[in-house]
Picture 1 (cartoon, rainbow, N blue to C red):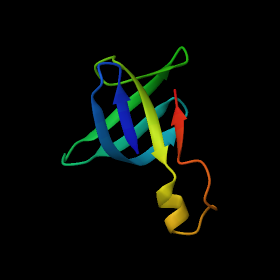
Picture 2: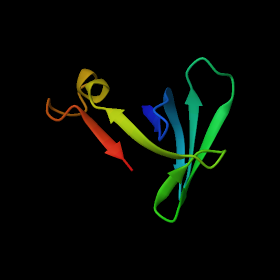
Picture 3: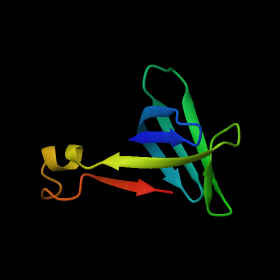
Picture 4: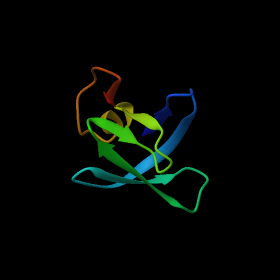
Length: 76
């Protein structure tokens, strides 16, 4: 998945868990787990910056979980 910050920064990560308003991810090239929280309809980073998440669908297509189609889902 891609994590996009409002300042233009983009991080690559793997989703570890999504429980209620809390998402935990493993960030590429990091040993730490990051946590994001849904607050008043906006996902916020640990330092309270708004973020969006993009899930490129090519991965799901490659393993046969879905047919070819739209290239990504974006969660805002």
